[in-house]
Image (cartoon, rainbow, N blue to C red; front, side, top):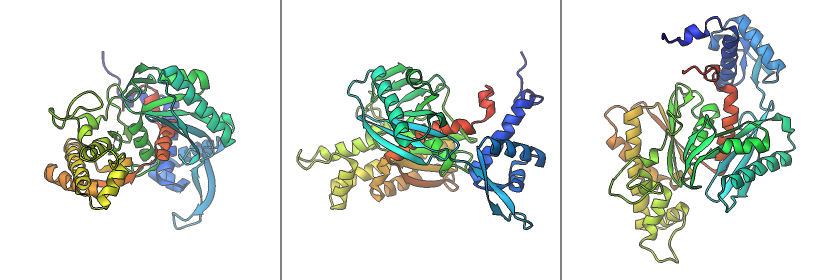
Length: 404
């Protein structure tokens, strides 16, 4: 059977063409900020008539706002169009080992209300789903936002997700396998619920409103309790065949190395993540003055402790070797290093960069930009909310089931 090309499928489908053009206008305004209709026409390469018709519809539906004037053409001033951040809201939840963080955001992922709640001791999926649903209801109620403005709920979970099915395939911290979390919450909330790997939610947030907004393809690497990776290719979050892409922390660094939380030996995470650094220092100290967190290790390094310094340096070197593998395989134009672990600063980052330069293939690092962004709990919850917001900007071709 002859395959139908994307261009053949789209051609003649007027509704799909209109949806694609509408999506193009929204994404252009999202990436560039306030624009005049003339600017939109030039950047989108749509006709003047198409831009005029689509923008009027988007204004009427309150997705775009008119306001302010520009002087783009050098002639008469033109009214600028921008996204309406108050057209709807989203709730984002991040599941941690012992806590649930929850944020209500506007459509620009600005946090309107944030809550930090305890995780139930009972890890039964029904109990957790109930706690998450109650957190959503409490947050929305406390915010005063009308419930009909709530577009949906996004949930970030560490582990392997099947996002299209809303299933947590494997969560090491919760010890879950094949849990239909989205459906368990959807029944309670009667709202769309989306789940995704937590690093992917952070990556989506960077793509929509962060450093990756103007970048076609980029990588986010997080370091903290674990080590994870998110990848955007051609402006689309890459999830792998079943949603398991990005387990960067579980590439084998030394097959005879220490046991990882995943149960296997010698993973990158078992050497370079925050718990590995803390354990390395704790091993040689008395219980009274042993560090408990990565911040404790940094404090020891600041005080001149050579072992703490060595542990952070070793972590950075191993992380740098791992990053060189990413560059050698993908050669992204941008790497965003994020997560709580970047708070270790130069103790970890300087040896990381030295190792990255030493192990990357000649010339591949020349045009790669690497930026460091420390991540707090607000950012994780905001990232989860971006799962909902991202649906507004998602290509209609994806909804139509056409591979990009």
